[in-house]
Image (cartoon, rainbow, N blue to C red; front, side, top):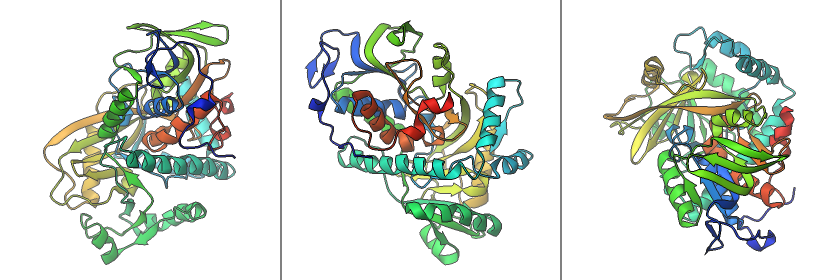
Length: 445
């Protein structure tokens, strides 16, 4: 696949007549019209706005709350470029069913008669086969590798101020059997250049003295990065505003006005906004929005939790993924966060005290000093989960001017830059820098 230049040549794309906001530094004529309207103000929506603006498009972004209010700000901030193996691996269903029997299981599926959730779970089970794994890994490797490069470019260009560091990630194991079982995953990562190094004993505790002495060992993925997601979102928002992108907060989408195979306008509490092209990047909320247009997106909201606090005295130096408990502990110069769990319980954003308690208990099993004081925030957010663990990026079925950028699961932050760049290429008619076919929404038809 031919490569699309990182520095986009704006002259390569035809300009539309009089448009809004700013385009190539000039104020446009119609304040309610833009070349592209992005729906969703999370990391993926901001990334789409960023690369479309670089491509010379006049962009408006609408967000029903404040920018970053969903899953983009409260996650643990891993830029997890080694996470190439999907959730749907052979044996995953059997393992998780037994896990559900544990009171503190990181996975919870609320009993339901919701046919959409039942269908999703059945399709997920169907994807847990050996034949699907190579396809998913190739696609995930492409988008993860691209995002790693683009994150480094954003950091060098000072477009983000997010305590961004490349210190790797430690996958920490309490038991020898779990540590050995990860060898299966690590062997499949080796061809992609992101295999981990096994650490035990003195070598492990020299690297991360915050771990409890009885920890069995860890696999060290050096390629991974991390950042503080709330500051990442805030700084990117400021950069986009300065570049002329119009950002409308507390401006939810009420409905689309349609004409044939085209979207004509988006009705919002601030009035109608029209555009030549529309990008739906609303995370878990993309599915109910698409349903208004009789588009079925098989995306389920997967709730995650986090607790943000001041750094404990014995704070980890490297982000730690506490493997058996599926909990992440991320240190930043300005704070510390525990996060994890996967709860399928619909669109509720309520906080479950037992789930928050499980995060704290899990950290206590691995870390010498698991909690800091004071607690700054307890949070929950909804991740957009697809049953094949690949995002939906590309032209929506039946609509000629709607592109989807959603379904990123637990890798929204990690894959946001590559998604935004790919969306800009598809909208502008440029050659994609990665193969878009594995992410095409038509695979769900």
